[in-house]
Image 1 (cartoon, rainbow, N blue to C red):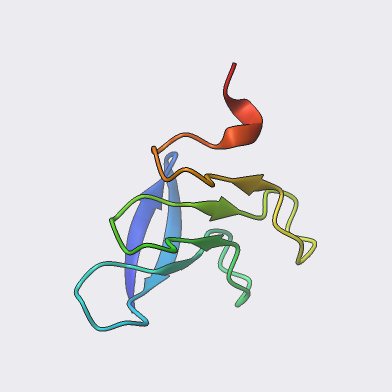
Image 2 (image 1 turned 90 degrees about the vertical axis):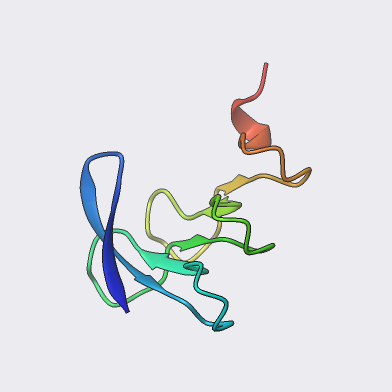
Length: 71
């Protein structure tokens, strides 16, 4: 586990696959994962913005941009 910064907020990151790249993030430090790097490329692919346990933002094409925010 190590601390990283996402949008200026300290996040706790975990390398679940052991490849040296954080795979899951606890952005608000509440002990619950709220962001995921599914393909382990260093970019967050899913995000639970309101911390309700349901993913709100998805990067389904792994282009580094959440699909819900793309124009």
